[in-house]
Length: 432
Image 1 (cartoon, rainbow, N blue to C red):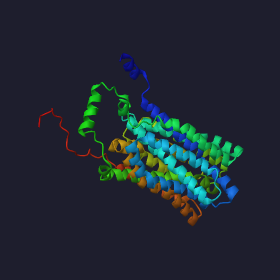
Image 2 (image 1 turned 30 degrees about the vertical axis):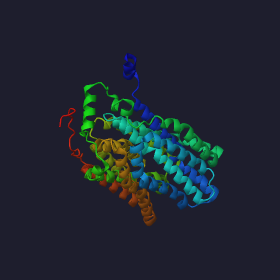
Image 3 (image 1 turned 135 degrees about the vertical axis):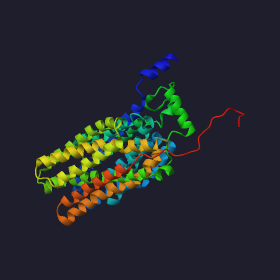
Image 4 (image 1 turned 120 degrees about the horizontal axis):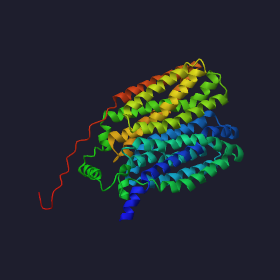
């Protein structure tokens, strides 16, 4: 008994192992395909001669699939736990990558991408977020930021993936990536335990014999924990304001991912190498911002921090849209990169803070249906504005307005009152 108690006091809290596993999974996906897809596009076009429309449709399909299936996936994660769902997802994603290595037609290409997308959805951001939220309350923003940092680190590993692509070819790289996802991903999913209670632990590593632990158990038993069901969350205006604000943020971020390099090279006259330096700097600032933003989110008001970040996105985009020199581009890079990183962890942590962890998967999944509109429509609208005007200025000004609108949505997203339920009253046996 003494040894067991000493072990609980000295061992690393298991929740941090969940974070490490989630970060590694996201790094794996980002480095092998998520942020390396642009390099695949060049090689696929060279071999097959497919149009940009054919090649760009795949990421759009991926976004649409992710958004439309999120409510079902959220229910599955709450019902069966992240570990089981992620295990299936890793296998599906790995098999999809191996099938991708054999494609000969656009139809095969789209089938492969749907497999990869489904697998990564089941074992990627949403699954990791659900797992981390269950294990942390006080340090939730920090934990989510460290898990999300895997995506940024993955982006910095992309040059290694590109080197393999150039050396071994895209088919062998895709097949090897599939094998690597299964070989590394399956062991990682073992750490994504559903919640601390199933291991006899409590969130944040709270001592199970403490008075605080007794209060937590009583609150959960009596229904006074403040956790919302999906139906209760959907009735709250804050759910919709957060979802619309998040959609506004992704409207901006996804557009930058598609159009930033083209704007810098075609409209601003920078070389591809200089534009790549801006992209690398953004990724680095995103990583720094993600980690520091997580630490800040556990100490300051998350909603107010997000409002500031959306304002930074707006200011950065206006600098980029009307840039007259390198100084304004640097200003955009600093504002957009840090805002991207600081805001990211708060998106998930804010929902968990408002609606609790009991139905978090279902609530996050339902919210994703709204969010996906931003990530799908943003690049299309910015591209359409360019086609009409021959310049990115109008499109980027629209993005700045959307960022400002997102700030308003988050200002309105006040924390809801806990749901009113009939209290549980404990009584002795035989007492009515």
